[in-house]
Image (cartoon, rainbow, N blue to C red; front, side):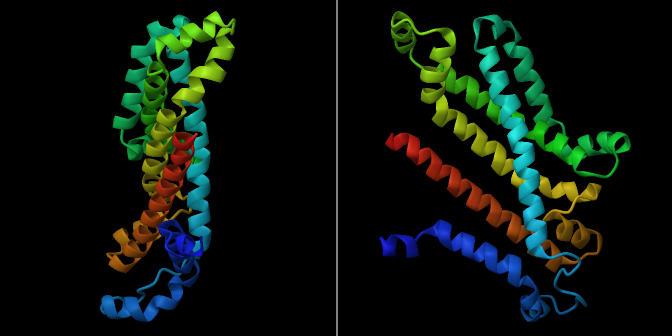
Amino acid sequence: MLRRIVTDPLLWCLLLLLALMFGMTRLDGLFSMLFPTLDRPVYLQDSFASLAWAHVQLVLISSVIAVAIGVGAGICVTRRAGKEFRSLVETLVAVGQTFPPVAVLAVAVPVMGFSEQPAIIALVLYGLLPIVQGTITGIETVAESILETATGAGMSRWQILTRVELPLAAPVIITGIRTSVIINIGTAAIASTVGTKTLGSPIIIGLSGFNTAYILQGAILVALLAVIGDMLFERWLRCFHRA
């Protein structure tokens, strides 16, 4: 048991993330050696811990909204009354992902101002497609014979949905949510272009000031968050497979 914990890659990624969040400023010597031409090789405007927390909060808020809308829309278009809207819903969410988040920010900022709201809208639109597709695919993979058996047992449509279809479709739905969240972890960095503090702040400042060290520091933490998020979802999916 102890050996399994010690060799757990998720644990080591978490420890590395925490070490960098709270100890990045102590790596001044390392970054000075890697980038000798830079006067300030370590980002000091904000603490990396506060940036990481703000980044996670933004991803969580946008992902919860996207899951609520995406799963709800996916369920609706698989019902008899909503099937005629399926192509429309699929087209809208596909357009939402093909529309660049930066363009969404450019349209939303003049209306909402520099805040988290335009970033949340952009992330929600960008994260809907895999959730809707996962929900539709998951529900449609439930065998017709199972649905007939549930109907024959006297279950209502609501009971069939909540007790049969959604539990059986859960692994596919979670896979769609997993894709959406991982995409949003990376995309959330652009929120710093509209004044929101995220791990994109050192990246944006690094790009504008030709400071490669800042870009590297922000990018490493974003990548670690994405890897950790992916590992957590992988373990969640294992629980369903074991069940």
